[in-house]
Amino acid sequence: MNIDWSFLISALGLAFMIEGIPYFLFSERMPRILLTIVERGPKQLRILGLIAMILGLLLISFGRSLSEI
Image 1 (cartoon, helix red, strand yellow):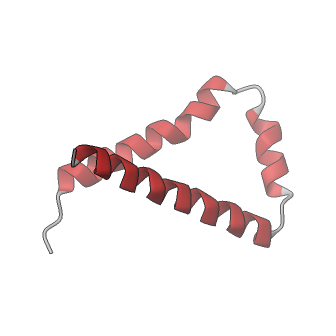
Image 2: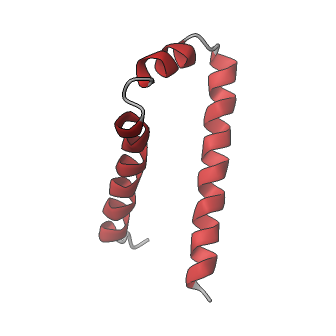
């Protein structure tokens, strides 16, 4: 298996950028949003994480299909 390190590092950088957008745009609201997330139960957080992973996988597959055109 050959790993394309530049692609992996670029993807990680993009993930950090996307993660930082809400903190930059909604810095006044983020503490309240984070408190509501903390109040959720483990099952709800697991479902939220699963939905985020599925959406990420769909975006990756969509992006790859665009590059094949």
